[in-house]
Structure formats: C-alpha cells, structure tokens
Length: 269
Image (cartoon, rainbow, N blue to C red):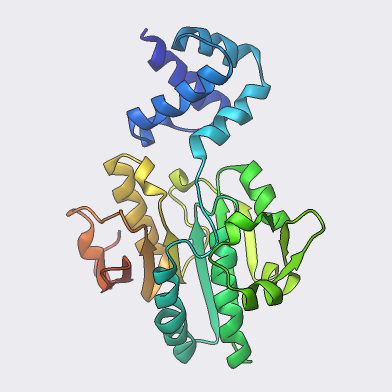
C-alpha cells in the first residue's frame, strides 16, 4: 500500500479526521510541516512515529485544523453586519441565534458578540445567542479563556477595547463577561452532517471551506441551508464562492462582502 494512503488511514482512525474531505495538497503540506518538526524524512517514517508517540496525535490534529484569524477580520464585512444585517434581524425578532462555524480561537464569534451587544443596548427586549464551534479542542480552550495579544486586536478601536476587554499586566487582553456570556462554545465536526441547531438566523463560515474538496463544500452548503430559518443570512469568506450545483440555495445580499440569504426550498435538501 502507498505510504501516504496508509498514513491517511491511520490519521482517520487515531484522530478522527477524514482526510478525503480535504484537498490532498493541503493535507500533504500540513503533514510535511509536522514531519520537519519531528525529524522524519518520509511518510513511512512519520507514520511509525505517529503510531508510537501518542502526544503527536493532538499536535497533528491542530496542524490539520489550524485557522488564522483576528478580531473583525475583513472590517468591511463586519460593518455590513453592524449596519444592515443585525438591525434587520432585530426589527423582526426578539431572539436571535447565530452559528459561527469553524470558530478557531474565538476572535470571530466574540467580534459578532460585540456587535450584538451594541444592538442589545438599543433594544432591551432582544436576546442574542452565538453558537461557536470547531473540531479543534485546543483552539476551543483558548477561545473559552478569551485572552488575546494586541496583534489579534488590531481592528478593535480604543472605545471598544476599554468597554469589552480587561487589560492584563502581561500585556494581553481578556474578553469581559458581558461579551463571553453571549457565546456558547462547543466541539463540533462539520463533517458530521448535523448542524449545531435549527432555525438559525445567520451562519458565518469564513475561510474554512477553502480546505475542503468540492463535494464537501457542496454538502456543507446544503447543511447550512437546512439549518437556517427563512431569509437567514449566510456569510462566507472573501475568496470563497458557491458552486453551480448549490448556488440556487442562496441569493446574494451583498456580493462584495460575500453575504447571502437563504432561498426557500420546495424540496428537502
């Protein structure tokens, strides 16, 4: 059996990540990175290392699921969410639920929570819940701790920084409880085919599907469509797009910022 194929089978068994759901060159790049760090010359050698060093399982999982992010990444997207999406939801609903899928270390759901909190100050009868999910438990632990360095906060203005973060002696900043309380973190595998909740008002999944193959991207589009309530919003990454097979499920809301809205389906997804 090919050494790379054999390694992939062990990865799926040991760390429960299905390699076939990702682009092969992406998987290889991430594994090669771990091979260099562990001084293994080829796939066969790294396979043996993986089987005999359990501590490598979590390190490899982190490498395969890594996602670079920061608060208010792509500020113009969040400006549309602040000015248009959230006010529109508030006008017609008292209870708003948002799913941030592939939340990594928490910067994006907390960014959404800050905007939601600002709306809640204007509308006292409105409640917002943000479900933030990821497969990477190490990233989720960091997210729940809610502590970040100044680089992650480059897009946070001084007013928001003072109001929503606690400045710590070591130079880091911790998200304040009134923002943390709006976000519910949990482990979730997007490959499971089951949404974190139903009848959601918005789903954000940005810069996550770029690592998936086309079939998995389409499956996720169907998943998010089924999880959203009527007229629900779907926010994708600036470089991402819907394939022809699934583009009928959503209509563009803001083409430039890659914000879509659910199209009612007459047949099951």
